Amino acid sequence: MEVLERIEILRKEKGWSINYLAMESGLTQSTLNNLYSRKTEPKISTLRAICEAFGISLSDFFKEANEEDELIRKVRLLSQENKIALLQIVKNLK
Image (cartoon, rainbow, N blue to C red; front, side):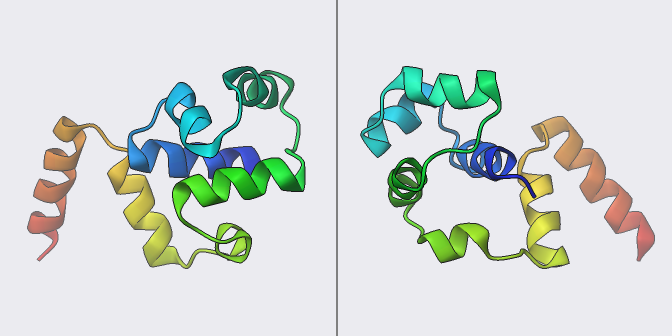
């Protein structure tokens, strides 16, 4: 998983805007916008600040997620309507 993709997943899991992540991490919004627009890897100091805002360590950030964790992350990103539809599909599998 790419670094920016991981940041985006964590940000969406928290329900945070880029502006809110900037505020929580002590970074400027332009710093974060530049990362996304240029699709560049952040400096370690920037990534450390982002991880601190999320309440995780750098090692946690880079830890490979197992399939179950990945599934949970993907479900959290679904709309409420899609979550209900998925629940119905799972119920039908029993």
